[in-house]
Length: 447
Image 1 (cartoon, one colour):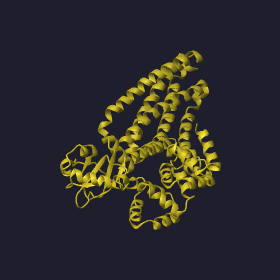
Image 2: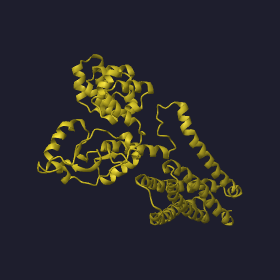
Image 3: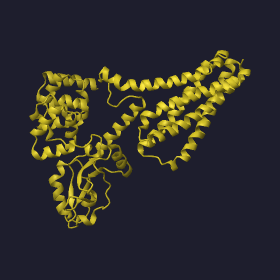
């Protein structure tokens, strides 16, 4: 279906009218339109933006990913870009300007009205992944001494320019946050009721330096549709809406997923060869060092393997199962740590459960493997060794799979990127050691 739409869009761009284009654009969502033009060259994108209405262009810029947004922006002159900015939320403008080259960014900012320029400049000061970096200044604030009727007049005036009106924030004369009012409560209250009497005085808020991941946790925990950002004196600076929080959650998930594979979140298919080498090679070299540790462990038992060649074929099964089981534990722990820290006193019960799980899984997998190995190699003791080694290695994988992420988190490292390296080292080295050590002990029964 997308291929058909892309063909149709190309036909309209080349031979259609502006009316045909607008009709096509109105038939799709802005984010779907962004995906349709993602592979267009700059010349075609320039034709598209020429055909677009200013408000449609603004919607497209808000929905496009960072790469496409910059490509679109560089087909526009500064005047057209500023017109589109007039329809966009300030936080989206800041995100976009943050990706501009310094020279172009300064040009655009200097052309803005003084009020907008101050807001944008202030927002650009905050780190990209902080609460200040993702907040918007488009929100509704009310004073506690207003009546419901007066508040509704305020909402009618500034509501269309804000992102969220479901939650209204109450401030004092110094613009300090003192409460919030749900729109539903406001609409169901008598018109003469004072806002101060129906507001909720306890408001969950964050400071602009708060990490965006912590913001996402708070919004998720308390089911908020927005969270205010305040200064140390509780002066409200802006709000973070739930759609921005969803973007953060997706971003953090992608980051953790990439890091668990030893890949930087900055890398993509379009990354240059030099940058990809710089970002991937260090982790491969670390993994290579851990592989040597496993190799040296195997070398310690060269004489044992030489006597029973079958050991070389079976030992990879034991170490591989340990790695798989450990990855399961690490995945659960990394997910839990992403949702919030774990206190040491809360670790005992889940830790013992993981050890018990390792024993049970090891016993079952070891029994299945042993039953297969016994008739294949016609040696009961080889099957018994596999059974015991599998239990031992899955216990090791449970032990390290649980402790490594927790310890790394306590050291303020990222457990998603470092855990798998230490886990692989432990399961390979100790897995080989347990299996080959048992083989050495049972050697009289194997030859």
